[in-house]
Image (cartoon, rainbow, N blue to C red; front, side, top):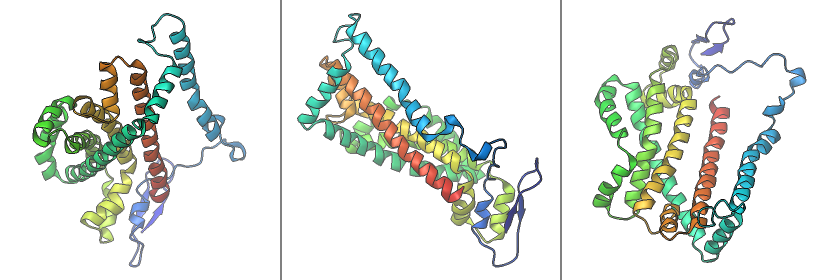
Length: 298
């Protein structure tokens, strides 16, 4: 099978060739590559698209927030118990690190998130594929899963504690629940709109079942899948905090609740900042995967 560009305004043309064609060619037509933008002089990258500009520009707002924070905390409008200075927050972090607690809390919370995210995202991919590709499974699962999705995260905590006690299992399962639904909904919705001509072309090459899904359908909906993964990862951190706030003796969520109970606002701010930084770092890992997948299947 070969892939040809149609005249401007038309969709992609799929040509099924004779025997000996590459099976993987069916996936190569999943997305039409964008045409070069006319008007670029000498192939120059636009100023706002330069990597250095994006990196520097990304730090502008955090720096402004830090300056405003410093000014507000030293102006006398707030007490140190209400708004500690950035220096106080750094000192609180150094104190916890010297006591061996900061690294431990970060490692435990990150481990819980990654395990729960992996389990939830995998199940979301499986159930999303079933619902998106089969009308029977769509009828069977959709209504029930939509109802379960509406249950607030905190509503699961007492039940999971009752079933699995206050341990790792209850926390990981809660995080997996949070990661499941963004992946499930995006995968199911996007697979329902895969180009039928593309699927027929894959079947013409003998692709069926799992091979058809991994070779043709999944690459076609890859951008939607990655968007779902990013949402699932953010949701995993939200569900982690919900779990650790209520039933934990270690982790960043525990640091939040313990600091609030003891009036340690400096540690409270430290936990919030760490959650933001680590959440961004893990999201960047998904971004790296997105770029790799774009080169692999783009």
